Image (cartoon, rainbow, N blue to C red):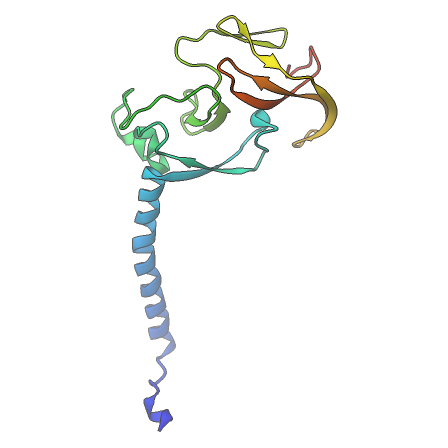
Length: 185
């Protein structure tokens, strides 16, 4: 009785066509859903360099909220925004705050994503002299430093001093300073 309830086996060609059709149906809704999600809600990026160490390490992945500062043509995935007219306005625009970690497109290299800590706001005057950061003439305060040797990405061991830096307004974050006069000071 059970043998009669089973379907006859399909030929290999028909099974392959059915499998391809199932994949095509799945991709037909997954790809547009992904594009809408990464345009409107969140996107993920990989940390490309050591500029955010020790907060973020090379190769770390971050998920970024697209709601934070509003939407512009740069919010579109796959560089589709390059097809839209240029402009400075954003939909649902809000200003970032000092100390925020921000993601943006490099103005000189339109395809390069940058991930940085924001220390200056419009109208601020930022200077770095002899390794000392000043914002509007106010020196960023540093905690007592702790010297140690860290393992740098692709460079091996290097001497650094770890500090907690306090920006005007009280925002704190950790930084690594190189010895005075070194190439990256």
